[in-house]
Amino acid sequence: MDEKDLTNKLVVVTGANSGIGLTASAQFAKRGARVIMATRNPQRGEYAKTTVQAQTGSQQLEVMQLDLASFDSIEEFANQLGSEPIDILVNNAGIMAVPYATTVEGFESQMGTNHLGHALLTAKLLPNLLKAPAPRVVTVTSFAHQGGNLSKGDRAELIREANSYAPWPVYWNSKLANLLFARRLDAIAKANGWPLISVAAHPGYANTNLVYVAPSQKNGFGRASGLAVAKLMNNTLAQSAEAGAWPTVMAATDEGLKGGELIGPTGFMQTRGKPGVVKSSKKGNDPQLAERVMTTTEELIGTKVA
Image (cartoon, rainbow, N blue to C red):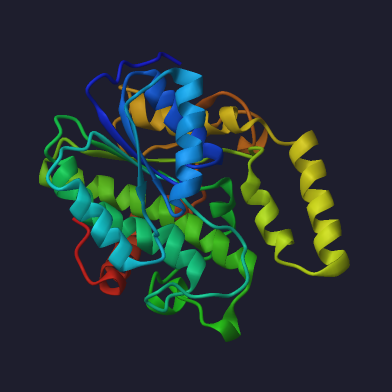
């Protein structure tokens, strides 16, 4: 993959303190971009910043606090950026298969963080993006979107209550919502004649800390055995975090993309391999479902995305 020069470009990466976000931030910095590393925990963000600086020598790294489970935090983040043009927004942060919890606004935390938070962030930063000559939004989904079962795209499907909550199916739905959001945003941009393109990316099965979150929430033997299995799978089946970041980097920089594509590993079952355009589930490529999900999303976040 060609290393596109990103000198004088501003890239915003959510969840930049670890995993895919950290590795992608380093790749953007290596190409000369100014990178805003948006993290929920500023201390971890500063540690990640020093890691990227050591790898790249870049002095164009800035850590900013962003909690995607809080609309006020998202608003404050956007306000701090002011009217500065943004060339690339990478909606990467996420949580996976956690026990039932809610965001500050009372939404189930996985859908609230992974999807609604990024939708609101994109809406707030859209004016900044449209000030750039060729802006791009990359939303990170997962091959697990194929397990998503959204069909109506209404509030009842998007926001589960405690009595109907199952960690993994809700995670799958949040990743399907990410993909549908990316494709609907691109369709809106094209309809309005904007220079912006929106692309989705997924890392395949990458060796990151995210896979340890679900078993770490358990107690006793369930916790120990779950963590052991996760470690074994990460060490034997997963590709590196660096390889997992390549689809995101390609989605953000490849000049041959037209918008609306899904970029992922092209190897075995999209779990590993070189990045390229890959197929999604049938639901992930349903424009009517994407429109319904976007409409419901805008109702939930209280603003038009675009």
